[in-house]
Image (cartoon, rainbow, N blue to C red; front, side):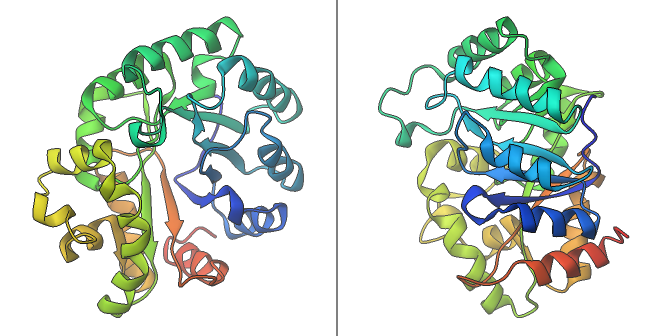
Length: 279
């Protein structure tokens, strides 16, 4: 693989990222900063994060195939790879049908997008696909460096590893809440799980494949579902929830720190880094 991700990274929505925060994440010992949301094809935020740091990798999670043509993002990929070789990984995905009026066949769209990226010279190991179901996971292994699944559990990670086999990146996202009081933790974790994801059929379908029921995904999510998707507790307990993905076959885990609205994520990032023994 051309991009060294390390074992642990920080996933954060693009609106909450800055070069200064990237510097602090790097100093804490995390291997990758993941730009969440649907970053634009010019990849200027990724460029600013790379410019402000020394060695940490930067990935997108994800550039949306529907809103950003491959022909637009490919030159940006080449610009970043030339300036910061081996430090940028292009994460792409199809989003979800509820957000796209002209949502065509997902697998055909993925294939066409990868064809266009291939034609533009983006290497297979320079890109990674957001995939949940078996067919998309198989495509991620065939056409890219691997998969960056979102809103999943260690059981999904185990199934993904079995499906894609060795030598393919499996890079799950895991929401975490560094709060020992279960009710307080769920109050923080439930809203970003419920809206929009428990109202989007691709995510709900994936959760049901993992054994969750209609009751689990109704009314904001059952406690057992929220506890799995937004792991909470002491820094040590949260670290165990993150490393469970590695035990299940992941190469790297993207930790998304959840806080009370407007809260500073840095203390939790620091506490988790300590529990993970990053430095």
